[in-house]
Structures are given as structure tokens and as C-alpha cells.
Image: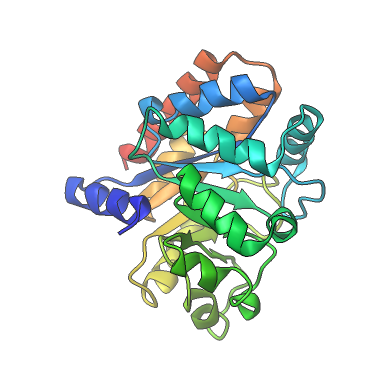
Length: 263
């Protein structure tokens, strides 16, 4: 059982929904980023999604693109991202960390070496948005063999024919993308999301977490009420991008977490 599996079992026993927060590793700099990440569990975050900076983030909107660019400009690399996770693990051995990014930096490092390093750094799961199920032998299956969850995205365009393929080797949870398009582009609507979550849950026992387009405590609560939890990324990253100090960022995160937990 991974930390992700353990966290969902714990939340289920408590009758609570999950709150997942995304931040870009190294944004705006390594030290500030580490301070924010270390503060996330205390702000009510159940699972941390740690963005891996990349030069061509095709699924990301301007907010997260800019965060990645700030991180890269500050010297952030795959190794520094793993270093940040290692540092976090010195004081927190229970909060799951999902590394979210693109395949190129992983491929460049070499899959076997990357998986060993990620496991040693305390990474629990991977979301690699540009590797479809047809490429499972490339990273998904080796990751699962190494003890890491491989989390797949389902979207409004994932029809009933495609869904079984998407779910086939997914573990940890299913990430349902609530809108068609890039991150931060539109607001999620619980009335649209609810039936889609139900459709996915009919095909899998995994928790279904909804992300994209959640930017307030009210929206977090509404989305969590029709799913197993909510993910917020762009709204948090925009606070960091605006230069808010970590304490203010974490206060905002806590309001979003409280929203999801009250669902």
C-alpha cells in the first residue's frame, strides 16, 4: 500500500473528501517553494501535487506556464525537484507526493534511474500528461513495479469506448479533468462534473478526484461534494506568482481545503 492508498483509506474511514494542492517545484525560488510545500499539510492538504518544471508544458495555461518558467529561470531541474521532496520527507513521512509533469525530463534521465531516485526521494505517484495508455510499457508499468502509483487523467472527451483503456493500468486515483482545454481556462461546474464522476466510478473502484477550474472555497466544496475530492492548482500558483508571502498563500490553501473537507 502506497501513501496515496493509505491516505484515501484514512479519509474514507473519516467520511471526508480529499483536498489535493498543486504547486510548481522551485516557484518562485527553491527556498520559498520548499517553505510553501512544507506548510501544505498544516493547511489541510491531503495530497501534494508537485509540478516538475518543463520548457513546453502543453496542458498548462498561462499561470502554470509562467510558474514553470520562473522555476526554470531560478535554476530548477529534475534533480532539484527530487531534492525538494527529499527535504520535505525529513519532517513529514506520511503526506503523499505526486510528481506531475511531462515525459521528456524523465526520459532524458533514464526511466530506471529516475524511478529509483524518485522512490528514494519519497515520491509516491506520477502524473505524466503526455504519455497515453498505448505507451504504458514506457513508464507506467515500470513505475508500478517500482511501487509508485501511476495516475491517469480522464477528460470530458474520454468516452465509454476509451475509458476502459485509460483505467486499465491506473492506480492511486483517477484525475478527472473537469473542462476541455488547458489549466486555469474556465470554471468547473458541479452539475456537469457529477454525472461524469458517476460514469467513471461505475467502471473503477479507484477514488475519482476532480481538477481544473476550481478557484474558491465554495467551488472546492461543490466539486468535492460530487467526487472523492478536489484538486486546485492555478488559483494557488497565481497567489505565488503575485508575490504573496508563504503565510498568505497557505491561508488561501487552508480556505480551499476547508471547503473540500466540508463537502
